[in-house]
Picture: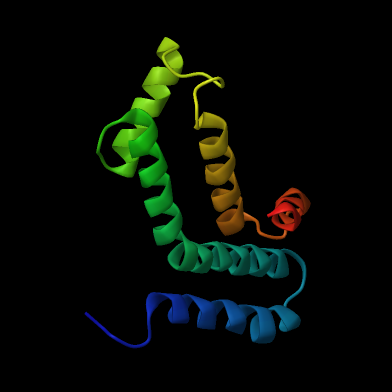
Length: 124
């Protein structure tokens, strides 16, 4: 296992290279693909930085709401099952808060410049 640089540092370095050095020299379709690549690397960097805490908080909320332990995937599958069967609905205590928090965390990773996300941050 390598200690330095971290995966986050590597991804950030490649993203910055594309944005600062490669993209200014590109045009047309190639420039578009470079922007897509830089955006994808930004998502990966945010996932590496924010994902572990976000996932841990989601697991904690789900375990409390569902009354069971499990992996994030197992807990989300159980939540979906209970929603399908009607055991959980929007009137279930904590479900609205969980859905909102989970959505905000996912948008923070995927698209933090989204205006709706920015509006939620002003309210917090």
